[in-house]
Image (cartoon, each protein chain N blue to C red):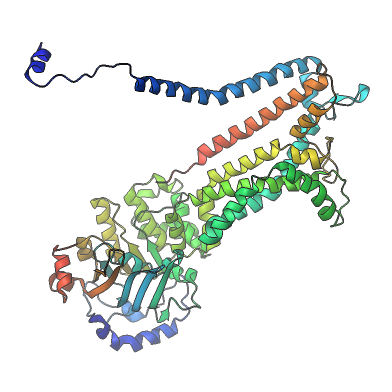
Length: 307
Length: 316
């Protein structure tokens, strides 16, 4: 909740940057050079990094049933932001607002502003297909297409009409997805023959192939064993050098291990069970959330008093 | 002996022996009744094959197999010198009429299926799908007269085409309309069965709805869509009444769709009502054509089953 104040000072800077990259081009990264020189491993104080997203009073309802309300927080570039909270608190619903995936559910409606580089994603003139070109997504269950490994990776670049040598694009994406060595000899085999963990890394590599700016991950490890989970967490830490990542997770240890910042959501019981509305309790650097949170409810949750 | 000592210590031993009761007799009876139900269709098929083959063998005693399968003149009901039993024109016309039908039914059928499963809102879908299903239940005689009394005179002649009163074009087009809902509803079922997670994955990569439909959902449902096409094709191959009413009574080896054409099923129907002796080759020809049609659809179905097995994708 305090975040809303702390990110005010850099708003001008952000808007200036948004103006210069009003029409972001696919594939090229329109990031300011200054960010690339920043020292790795050193956690910057809130506000020095650039916010790529600014959520302002975001709420989602399905039909007449509200799912999540009054969410306001920024998401910073080249960080891993984790969304945690008990079941039904609206964290998956919220992450699907970040690339307009909620559009696929006819009854869903979104209120408030989801600003991405200064543009409200829910403005009438915004094309959700364009949005998703810049913001990749990895889902709860691995969902490779029933095609070869090669065609899975090449799908995104092909539908976006990307130029360049497809073999190189595929190899580069598989290398970034830490999968190349395992699959380089069977690129033309069906992706369904891979293990669950490999399939999920394939889905990550598939998202990377279109060179997005942001990768959204909705409980990416919930269907995987601990070893596969560990590999994907390592991969996320590598990827945040070049991408911004938002992850929904049920696993608090995972949030503690990988994320820079954690948003804790809770679900209100208003009257009956059918009117459960999720909302944000606090967003803080992950260390703070797990050691010294501002809100008593956060402390109760991360210490296992409820959940 | 241990059993007796165990029995002696506690409560009376429960009776677990098999005894004949009303319930067990009923179970057995139901089992045989269900078996009989399953056997009915098997026995019927065997009976059909047997009756077809019996007369076909007699026919091939009169007319040579080679003459039948390679002859290019089909005039079985003509008398004397002009009578000829070359089945090639009849098979050709059957495939030609089916081809015209599929030319209509495949694009519109697959198009409707993609629209229903990928584009239509739940409300539109709730209305449109039952309408399509009702359309596939319209008696084919209605379609036949629609072709004869509306499509031929009003549409085809209205467009300035020089078509005969009985012509292949009209019959073929309406044949397509007949099988369109079959293809659309079966293909729609196949497309709808593709898990939503695949669509989400493709949308998440920035694909448009058309790209998601054509590049992900359609290939993922390929085996079901092909099954829909084969079902439509076998219906078109075996369709009788539309061709009988609107297609005409003769089978020539021609590519001209404005003249009359007859397919195998319509020949069987026409010949069986004609005044022919039951002893001659005219009568046997009905069964020979029936056998040929039977073999054709059998091959079509066998190919499709192999194809569907090979490309079937099992989703969790």
